[in-house]
Image 1 (cartoon, one colour):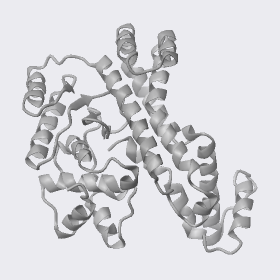
Image 2 (cartoon, rainbow, N blue to C red; image 1 turned 60 degrees about the vertical axis):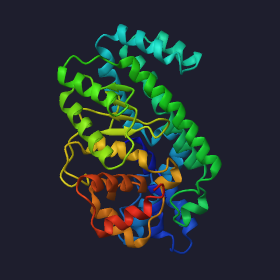
Image 3 (cartoon, helix red, strand yellow; image 1 turned 120 degrees about the horizontal axis):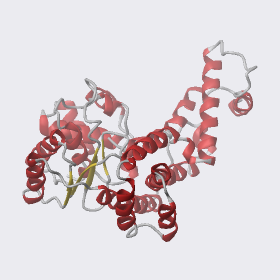
Image 4 (cartoon, rainbow, N blue to C red; image 1 turned 90 degrees about the vertical axis):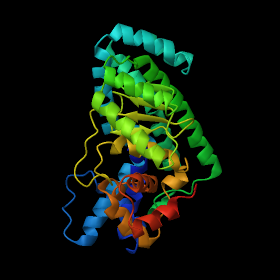
Length: 357
């Protein structure tokens, strides 16, 4: 349940244009609407066609703004991340900055390190860290936008075809971000003092092969992580090597989808509304993130188009599945598979997507 979903949201802009693609002389009307969309004199739409044209024009304008500056699409996310990072860095700022300097020097270039060294307030340091973190998302959005043609917009195509070169480019972005995030989290690591948490961290290392475990004295989270590891292992799933409770994550969890396996969990966002997840298990979030390690680490799989007969299964599985790309649906299926079991239709969709089996 992480940043991959956020990255997949942008191309939905193009989908809205399919509602008006059959209108005659669409190109001319479209251009006129874009030129007028910010004028207060533009009358309120009175017909369905006018409404859809107005909406399409706004979406197209957003696409153009994102193409010019990817940060436009993630400005809300960036604001939340800055607030969280600032809060995290405020306490013991000098000590945390020193640790960050030590760990990040192993993965960041000299220019970044010089800026970190000059950052004399939590706000300034937070800005640098967040910008480094979202560089992956920024470049991903730029890649998508640069490969969506005007023709694709007009015909309602949501995404470009992901070539091997594009997959390799995104893979390198993931590698770079994983190195940065793990270095940052090592710098922010705090040894647990709660005996229950310490015991669980040791179990994760000794019985399940985890290398870096940082649960920051959160007993409830630790118990849920342990249960998720137990259930996943019994279900034949390989568990990740790094398990980290972090204050930098804007969502409930994330699998970095690179290397030996690393999951991030936000202790403050582990409870979800009824029906949002495919199970009611209190350990659903860590289990979901573990399950991300079972599907191909390809953007083409993330955005794989499902046959029409599976749309209802995807939408009924969970609220999260209904509102997310294909790899999230597969992950929700896999989590439910080992907790409650799947019905016939869900099992069929799982088998269809389980191409690594």
